Structure formats: C-alpha cells, structure tokens
Image (cartoon, rainbow, N blue to C red):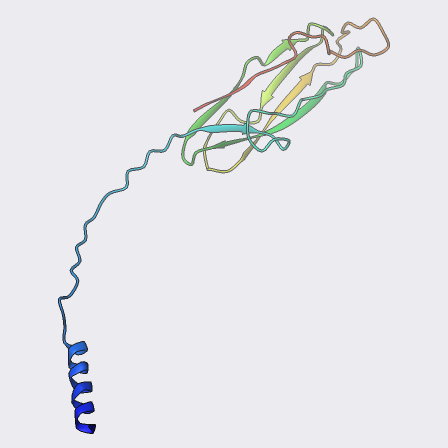
Length: 155
C-alpha cells in the first residue's frame, strides 16, 4: 500500500511538473495623439477664473493741486509658452457724468504664458487742477455711460 501511494504521488507530481501547452503572448505598440487648445484667462483675487477685474476707484476734490491715482490688480494665466499682449480700449477718458479727465496705464503690455497667474496692474490718474461737474456737495459717476473700460488679452 505504501508503494502504491508513493507511485501515485510520484505520477501526480510528474503530471503537474510537466509543461503543458504554454500560453502565448503578443504585443504591439501604438501612439497617443494629443491636441491642446491654448488659451489665456483674466482673473482677479475676487474670481478664480473668468474675466472679472476688481473696479478701479479714485477720489478727487475739485481743483486739487496733486493728481489723484488708483490701481487695480488682475492676473493673466495662459498656456505655458504662449505669447500674449494686453490692451485697454482707451487710455485717455473724460468721464461724461463728472467731466473729469483721467488716464489709464498698464504695468505691462505683453508676456509669455507660464501656466500660472502672472500679476498686472491698471493705474488710473486724474490730473490736478480740474473743476469737474457736480451740483451737490459730493457726486459719483454712477450715471456715467462711459465708465466701463475693457481690457483685452490677445494670444
């Protein structure tokens, strides 16, 4: 009986140890084609994305002897290595509600995208010595039809 058991176990061992038909493999290669559409975004600290820029505010007193200035900061985020330019729709404006002339300037006119926010500033300047137009002790340009300015990023 012992011999029979040893023989059966030996045969079973040989059966499992014998190579059967090995599974075959095949491989191939392929390319992955990618298309990237480049873009730029304008954003401020008040908006994660989109073309929202914090308003620029300036306060002026009739005939003041120094210029009044104000700034607003915004970010431009462009695809890495993408060149871009910045432009304002107008840099010299006379507000049609308060009759005050002012100028606007950008801290930079161009750049190259880095994939992260790049900060820029718009500076406003009201020259000294202007009278302005106001029928009360204090006025705002809330009714002005030319107070909204446009910043354009071209890429």
